Image (cartoon, rainbow, N blue to C red; front, top):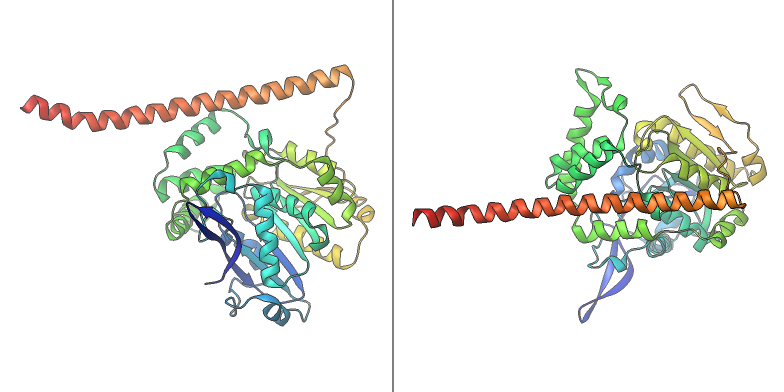
Length: 400
């Protein structure tokens, strides 16, 4: 199996290696690194691997590494894709403490993987947490980047917090209680896709039924994510932040950026992606699609077209100003493509400062409310377990 050791950490009195599991697809001079999001594994990129390389068959020489193996695929106009499991999930190393997880640390993991592959530069496409990691990587090593695509991205911290309503509370409760692949699959479907997409008929059954079976099979094959891995990746999202200096580095590096988002995303809210795109003008273009958090699965053709357009624009050495001066348009499939995202203006007068303070306060109150709800739910679950344990004891006492 293809693994890459990207780091080392101290485990008790010993030092252990951090290994990433990865797969390569296709061959060609154009290199694309796909960075998956929270709790996701490399195979979540299936529609994009197929769209970019034309095949879902892994490279036959995946065991090889370094410059020699990479050089074999440097001829021709094809595309070579590499996707991997982040630390904490899938077949990659699961580190024991959340301090071993941050978007900066995982960006260094991705950079080490590029070194392992012998890739001097690559197009870096990330989804959700993977998009946060891609932002960090772009700011950390801009000379290694051809272009960046950010799918369903937020700025981390409070922006990772979904819109709080009855549906989200119900999903959060069910997610915390999910103990089997079947229970987890039901929650994942509702958080990743729009209802209308799930209810579409495909032959004699709905898409929901088909995807449910695929999700159960996928989760069963890789296993449920460990608590350590999940808590670590959540910590990475929560502590993520792009400084003004880092965003300036991306803006001035010369490569193009595409921010792609589903309008019905209930996990990563659209307004945060718009704000990030605006902060990256003139190198960024905003692409809004009809879809939810996994818009890359729900609208694969439109997403793949946007990614290919980014690659072609980079090859033609399109200037950032030209990229951002493309006129706004809406496609027949409902995609809204705009180089000028819906403006999110922050005023600097007293009224603007008051509005920002109120927004921050509401965000904190919302987070506190969810935390209290979570504590109550976990406490309730704990009490139920205690009652289950106590029941046989009481029955035994009565019988005696």
